[in-house]
Length: 310
Ligand SMILES: C[S@@+](CC[C@H](N)C(=O)[O-])C[C@H]1O[C@@H](n2cnc3c(N)ncnc32)[C@H](O)[C@@H]1O
Image 1 (cartoon, rainbow, N blue to C red):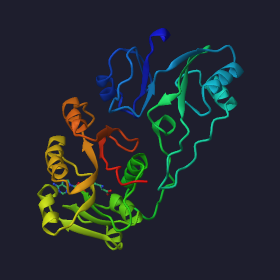
Image 2 (cartoon, helix red, strand yellow; image 1 turned 90 degrees about the horizontal axis):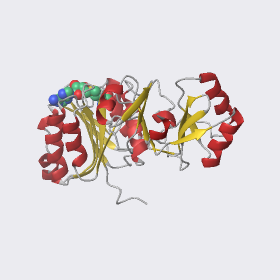
Image 3 (cartoon, protein in one colour; image 1 turned 30 degrees about the vertical axis):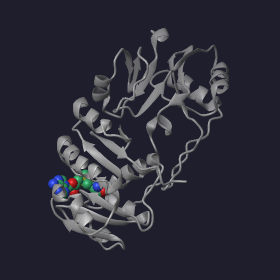
């Protein structure tokens, strides 16, 4: 079995199923780690993808640590068996300790590999993984007082992966914004935010400088309204609960209008694989669809302008 492994995928907690529907050549499933005999694909539902993993035979704990470190410095263990032995190897490694992230956080340039013990004398390790976070999990310093809910962590993660944030004086729209976790993040970045929802914002959020609110149906909001006022939109955020098809059609109107260059939207999927519609989103030029650690039965759509940076 080991000789055949060409890629491995770590599923988000409780979401093996949609990921399994995406992957071909599945050889084994070890808790949340799916091993495949096929070269890696950019699976949407993966929390982390181990590209080109290698089988490393080991004869001791020291030997394991030495062999991992001869590949690269930083490693993250995914432990599904032989936990004590795996822990002892982990302790021998000089990997950088994962630290809590303070938002806005920049990504460390150091690659982070992933490894596991397949049996007592065999490691599976990939020096090249898709997530910069240990097992795909970013750990942010949380704010228990400012935001009205935990949705802010989803936007923390999305903007950290985007490697850009709304800037002072930029204008953002925040669709399906109630009670205001995302608006709180955007305001904290220094940008102006207009939240749209059928339900009001949390009172504390609605009083923040630079935050405004309109109670209305999200899908009635069209780019013409801003074009008429000669106003451009720097960021389009949407966390609205709706069928993905409805979001797709409406998003295309916004993208095609050219009025806005940065889009981050949640695609709500109810844990179904829905490859058909997900592929449509990811086929929009300059787009990326991923499952964030803070996403549940949903994916996140990114379409970002990186031309004006640096
Ligand atoms: C997941 S919640 C958003 C949480 C928000 N991003 C935050 O950070 O607090 C989804 C929101 O979509 C809103 N919503 C659903 N359908 C809508 C529609 N057609 N028009 C406006 N808002 C809608 C709901 O009222 C709800 O507040």
